[in-house]
Image (cartoon, rainbow, N blue to C red; front, side, top):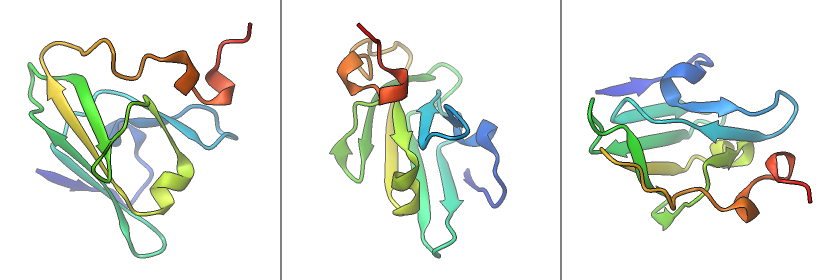
Length: 112
């Protein structure tokens, strides 16, 4: 099943705005095998989810345009470039994926 979103619907695409004035989106667990987000420039941002099922709802890894992507957030400008975000799902979480504090956007970082 491929979903094509024309309207702003954050629930179905598992990427949520962190703050209405900041250009960062947090990622949740994908539920559809493929989502296509049409862009104003005529290109699409595609989200492809491999091995997703009722039992496989944990993100094991991610790739952005074929490159390893280890961040649990994404910048708005990435959407506007018409890229492909791929997730590999599993029944158990991969506790190393997206956990490093140095990879957090400034607004989410821990102040010392």
